[in-house]
Length: 104
Image (cartoon, rainbow, N blue to C red; front, side, top):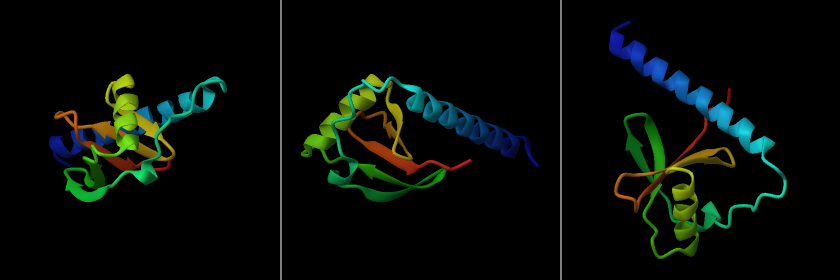
């Protein structure tokens, strides 16, 4: 195994650990927290291919749900886990990606 392969696997393992910790923290959040006001099913998503495999992306700026999702992502430093998917904001600030989380 090359050192690049090792670093990629180490990075991926770290991401899995971080995702599991975030999921557990979400489960432990107080029940009085306001639920997210956006519905990902009402947002137009297109399939894309990235360096880590297939994911979905959206630039549906005409959708109110997309705008609320962007606000929610901004409040979480551009990354969040919700309903079994990981969401992130691209550097341009107007594109969002999502990918199903790997189950451990």
